[in-house]
Amino acid sequence: MLLLNIDHVPGKNAEALGIVKGSVVYSKNFGKDFMAAVKTLVGGEIVDYTKMLNEARGIATKRMVDEAEAMGADAVLNVRYSSSSVMQGAAECIAYGTAVRLL
Figure (cartoon, rainbow, N blue to C red):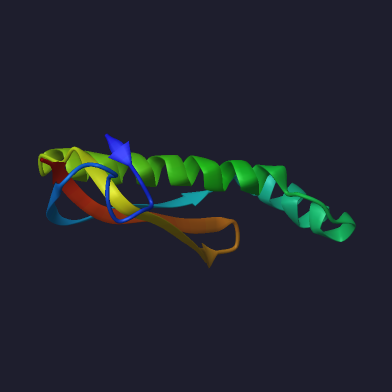
């Protein structure tokens, strides 16, 4: 599956099939959340949260691709990601774009 964050595939025509999305609400365990809170006192990257969001984006992307494949798509264009905090230590991540069949 071709994933692009542009609105066309250079040199190809495409038939738009519709919007596809994948989402997940992801959380770390309490121990890692506690250690992240301690890290805010000294500053720097909170590696466990970086890993959490990367894992969440991967899951959301896979769900978006699965939805596009079910529609018969060859590619997803204008791929975008968004995330938001749902509660302390948990974040929602969504991946979305336009499923297309290349002609």
